[in-house]
Structures are given as structure tokens and as C-alpha cells.
Image 1 (cartoon, rainbow, N blue to C red):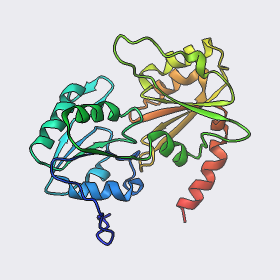
Image 2: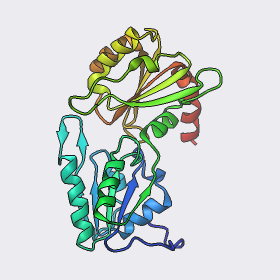
Image 3: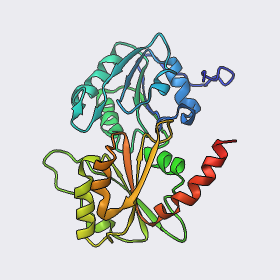
Length: 264
């Protein structure tokens, strides 16, 4: 994929400006046109660990690429240092792209980075990306809402700030609601236990989606009661997320239709 030269953007990225760009769930074809343009204009790209190699391959070859990403228990840089690095690069007059997996404003700490840039008086834009939840659900054939199965959906994170109290799981126990858990692998057994204690049925279907939208995608389905054992048995690794709710029952039927389309 090359930058769409036939569609020049009326507002190119300026020197000393920052663009918070959502890289989507992994498949480079899911980037927005504006995100692709910014990758081609950048002088420096600060990227997360969850950004796929296929997306990084689209970055301007002359640009400096700096990995600043985080995963649970694996921090390349503390968030405060990342914020300062973005500011420093912009003050050097560089065109800065902060490339974030999924969408910058959905568990991506884009809000914290934008606050820092605003306080420093640095111009910044935000380019949304397809979130991991949207990409994973679509690729796996799981509608997050469905008139017959779920009338709502909640997005939560299983990884909380150190010293912060646990999530109020009682807010997410209705059978008519789909629950999507980001960064929940390490706490999968605990999440399942807390949801059941709060009233969610042990037989609630769960999908574990690993490497969503990529050639390495893997979808595992189980019941809430066996979630922790399933994650451990199949050695699931990040990036992965959990979809909990009755909509998961549609996965087998709808995935077959998606597979037919991919087969041509």
C-alpha cells in the first residue's frame, strides 16, 4: 500500500505539529486515508508495541521510528517520559506522529497525551482508528449488538492504575449486554470469578480473540466459568481481548460466511 498521491490533503502536517494517529487493530488495509498520509509526511514516529509490523512498513522511510509502547508488565518508557518526548520532538520543529494501536482515545492514553500537548501550547490533531474491539468483533463474525441477543455494549479494561480499586462488575452483569474486556488476559480467571459473583451466569459464552484482523488471528470460545482455564490451556498471548455475552453464540454460524468471502 502506498500513500494516495492522487488525493493531496489540503492541510498537511506542519513542522512542530503532532498527529495522534490510530493504527487500527493490525491489518494495514484498515488504516484511514488520513492516517496513511500522516505516516508518509512524518519526520518522527513514536509507536506502541501493539502497532503491527505491516503498518510500520508504511511509515516514511526517512522518518525516525521510536518504540515507546507498553504492554502489561512491559513498559519501554513510563507515560510521563513518553509525553515529554512528544513535546521535545515537536519543539525541535519536527513533524511528529504518535502512532497508537486501535483508536487513540479508547484505552490508548491519547487523552493524557493531548492534555500534555495542550499545556505545552503545541498544535495537535487526532486521527481516529478502528478500535481493537470493533476490528476483532468484525473479523471474528461477532456482532457486538444484535436485536435478539444484546441491546448494549460496554468496553472496560482489565488493567487498572496501580492502587486503583477494582471495577464495579455489578454494572456489567445483564444478559442483554455485551462486555468487551481490553488487557484482560492476566486477570481472566479473576474477571470470570467476579462477574459470576456479581450475577453473570457461569454458562455465558466468551470469545477470546488473539491477533485480530491479522493472518495470525485466533478465536477461542468457551463459557465464562472456564475462561481462566481456556486462556492458560491455549497459551493465549497479547494482543488479545475478551468478548463476553450472548452474541458470541453467533460466532460459528457467521464466521463460516466470512470465511467463504475470504476464499473468493
